[in-house]
Length: 211
Image (cartoon, rainbow, N blue to C red):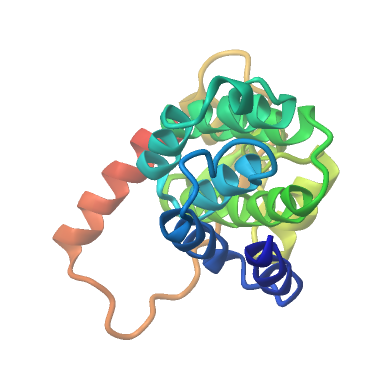
C-alpha cells in the first residue's frame, strides 16, 4: 500500500506522531469497504493512536475491525496494551510492551511509545513525589533498578541522607527500607509558569494517574 511508504518514511524520520493521521486519512479515502481486513497494519494503527494519547480513537478503531483482524496476535497484544492505557496503568502498559515480540513498523512505534511513556512517568514522579524507592521508580519507568538509578541521577535526583530516608520510609509505611530512597529534585521553575491554583489541579491529576 502506498500509505505504508509514507508511514515508513515518517518512522525513519522519527515523526511518530504523524503515523495515526496518515493511516486515518488512508482509511477514510479508501474506496474499499473492507479496507481494515487483509493487509491493513491494524496493530500499528492502534499503537499510533496510543502514542498520541488518543485512546478513544484507538478503541473505536478496534470496534470497527472485522473479526479476522481482531484474531491477529499482534492486534490482540495492541488491544491489551490499550486496555491498560485506558485504565491508567503505566505498569500494565510496560508489561504489554515487553510481553509481545513486536515486528515490522509496529516494532519501531512500540519502542518510541516506550520512550515516551518512560519520560512521562518520570515527569509524573517529579510532580507527585518528594522521595521514591529505586524499586518503585523501576516499576513506573519499566526498567531495572540500576537503570532507574541512572535515570534518577541524570535528572539530578540523589540518594537520601539518613534523616531524609527515615522520614520517607515512615511516610511510605512500616517495613519500608529507610536506606533505599531517592530524593526527587524538581527542576527550577520556568518563566511564565501557570498560577498556583492550576498547578494544584494538575498535581491532583498526576496523583490519580500514579495510583
